[in-house]
Image (tube, rainbow, N blue to C red; front, side, top):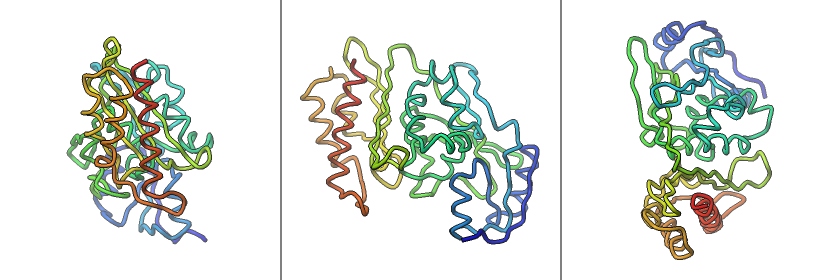
Length: 284
C-alpha cells in the first residue's frame, strides 16, 4: 500500500518544530528515525495532516556527561549509542541492549526518542529506561517538564506525551562502580521483537544484591518493574533459593498476553529462565 497524502515540513530548530505542533495539534506527527512511522503510513495505520520531520534539528542529538548524569538526545540513533565509549563505560545496560534491536540498517536510522515515544511494549529502550530510573525531558512551546520513565508509559503505544510536545532527550543517572547490569531477551529470530526480555541492574557487594531493578519487556502493556521478584532477592546473595523466590513472584508481577506464537504460560516460563540468568550475571 501507499501512504495517504499529507503536508510536510522540515524545521531546523526546536522552537520551529514546537510552533508547528502547537498550530496543528493532533493533526501533526513527528518523523524522527521513521522506522515505525513510515511502515504505519504505508499500511494506512497513520494518516497525519502534517508530517513534521525533525531529523535536521541538531540540538536533539548527541551524548554528553553533565553533572553526574548521561544525557542522550532523542535523535541519537541506536547505532550511535552502541558505538559510544561513554555509554559503554557509564551505562553498560544500554550497550548490552543495542545488539538486540532489530537489524543493522534499522539501528543506523532508528532513534532513542522515536522508540520511546512509540511505546511498543516489546521494545528494548523503554525497559532499559525504567530499569535505570531515567528522566524523560519533554518540551512544549514556552515550557518544559520532566517525567520519570516509570510514569511515562500508559499502555500499548500510549504515553504521557501530549500532542504539542516533543521528547527532547533522556537523562540517566550514572551508577557507581559496585553496580552491575545485564540485558537478555528471547526472540523467534534474531532481529524480531522479543517474546520476552529483561533489563536488570543491581549493586553487588561481595555477592549480595541490593538496589535490584528488574524491568521486563514483552510481559505486559508497558515495561514492567517486577517488584515482587525484586523484593525476593533484595539484600540476599544470589542462590537457587533466592532465584526460585524471584521466579515464583513473576506470576504476580507480569501480565503477558498470549499471541499466535506463545501462550501466557510459555512467556512466564521464559521470563523465569531469563530472570535466573540475569541474577547470575548480576552476582558474578
